[in-house]
Every structure is written in structure tokens, then in C-alpha cells.
Length: 77
Image 1 (cartoon, rainbow, N blue to C red):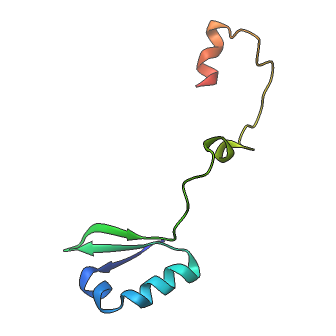
Image 2: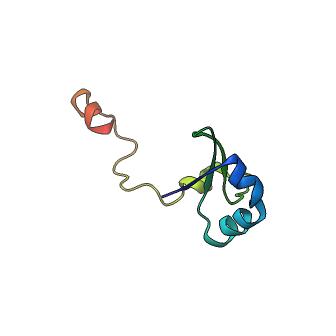
């Protein structure tokens, strides 16, 4: 479960919250009048190859070159 804190609480203890996120990796949501406005979370570089994100996620790969029958389309969705 993510932690929700108000802007005033965050302002008073920002460094403490930064260290908490670094230590446990759990995001903190900063609210303004009860509405979420910001999320503080660990940095993750985005310069990864998009295909590397998908590597290992394919569960089954049977006959990839065979045509798909009309009644099998529903099963693929």
C-alpha cells in the first residue's frame, strides 16, 4: 500500500521521505487538500531497449507461421 501525505507534511520532512523511498522503494503520494498531486518514487532509467522489457514474457509459441482460423480469433484476444 502506498503512503499518502499532505504537502505541508512533505515540506516539513522532505529529506526524511526521500530517504524512506530510497530505502524501501515504495512510492509516496503527496496530496493537496486530499487530492493526489505528486508521486515520489525511485528513479528507473528509461533508455532500456523496449524488446528487453518483453523478453521472457511469451508463454506459448505454437506454429507461428500457420494461418489462424476464423473461429480461433476469439481465443487469441
